[in-house]
Length: 314
Image (cartoon, rainbow, N blue to C red; front, side):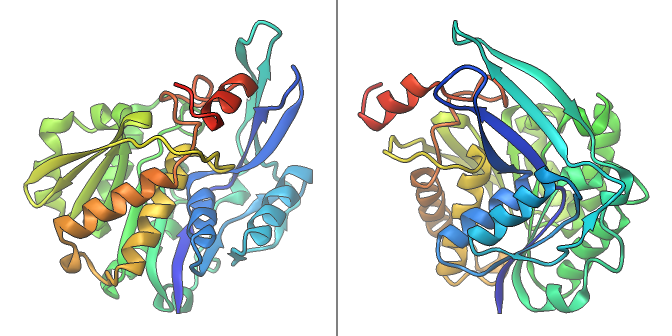
């Protein structure tokens, strides 16, 4: 049995190294980073994706394999490029977003890529909203979530809004998210995305309408808020001496899903507030310093910040 089957986009992120204009590559894309985080917690994870046939794409596939994640769609797309995001760290510590480009359309998953047998063999199916960004190519992701829902799997979904993928069309992004909510048990959103979906007051009604069992709003370094069975509660962030190479929120969510799986949760009906609180706290411990604040550029720590963090300074 595969603990997690993660579906969606693959991107490449660069974080600055110890010197200006030096970079550290890390796997990017919420589904990929969640799969890595689950695998790092000792569970079996598989990633279904496509990447460009370039050094960035090969790096991403190698990174997944290095962390023990099985790559379900390992072929590289010759006519496509992997999304690239460069952040330059200037001498004065300023971070500058310098370049980005979208993946080619042929990098979107096809119906043949997402196999029903893989869904049937998995306990949790996770997907990211970036993979919904190019209709009708996104039909494969939608189909996978629907099949997982029909098979009684625990379906996890990350509302991961990126201007890069949606061309600033918030309405189109929101509509695509709403279309898949009926198949979702666990929903991960950020403060920004809560606003995109109508604000915190709208979340309980959305959950009731679409059958979402649990919504987690990540609050960066301040922890998370859970919307659960008509109520909500906060779990504060916890200072830990840990730096995770994956994305901040993705590392948190992967650890959260891993803890749910280790707790024996097989379906949404098995969730209790005690289990959710425990999993949230575990996720916070397994989070990373990159959640200093929301936003890919602003959240990237400097070397001094990392050293201070590890030294236990505030």
